[in-house]
Image (cartoon, rainbow, N blue to C red; front, top):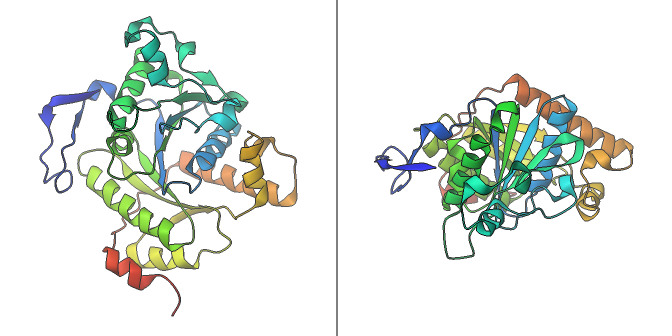
Amino acid sequence: MLDIRDPINPNEDGEGSVQVRMDPTMEIDTAKVFAVYGKGGIGKSTTSSNLSVAFSKLGKRVLQIGCDPKHDSTFTLTKQLVPTVIDVLETVDFHAEELRVDDFVYEGYNGVMCVEAGGPPAGTGCGGYVVGQTVKLLKEHHLLEDTDVVIFDVLGDVVCGGFAAPLQHADRALIVTANDFDSIFAMNRIIAAIKAKSKNYDVRLGGAIVNRSAGRDQIDKFNEQTGMASLAHFPDLNIIRESRLKKSTLFEMDSSPELDAVQEEYLRLAANLWAGTDPVEATPLKDREIFDLLGFD
């Protein structure tokens, strides 16, 4: 939950910010926490789910939290659209003390624990409240004490409270992007948001995960200009699209040389993130600067 008694100075948390400080009792202090961001439709859920499995293959106890009202972050792990925290809270008239763990936590592939925060109906509330309630429930049931890795799969809207709330819990923010203008433009805005939040919270920028891209020339241009860094690269393969249609993670698909290479890249990424990555000090560009930078002469 957020403590409304302790407002943040807007000048400290981004110009015009109306964010408030997080209740310190809601901090996740027993696990490594990663928040996955990126433009809508870029493959955040696919990336998050396969990264969760990769961590679990390394022997880690993993919890993935979907933070989008679509509540489809974990369906390749659980093979279903699980009820959201908001759904189950409504069934008990928002008396959270009446809930059991198995009302809102589901075990997915290879032991990955899955939660879908959900969200209020469009135009009726803030996703940030939902994320806060989800973390509160997990803390109250002591679920975070037995977890090594928490992955927040975050909706794409940069201005929403549901976008910002996971940054108050995360150690590293990871940005999924493709080698195209729109994805990099969105990544630039997300970098600015993370930079603002890092003034008051422990979260730091972890780097970019290049997804659905044969090459990375445009991303390399952006990285060189801003100081951004790429952590992993996943090509635009049909097998990845098929995995979503088959409601499966990539680690459950039939083996092939190209799939084996993708699995190895996920395992390499998970191992590097677990070992600890230095924060990336990137400086976002102005909109016009990005427009002038990217593309072909």
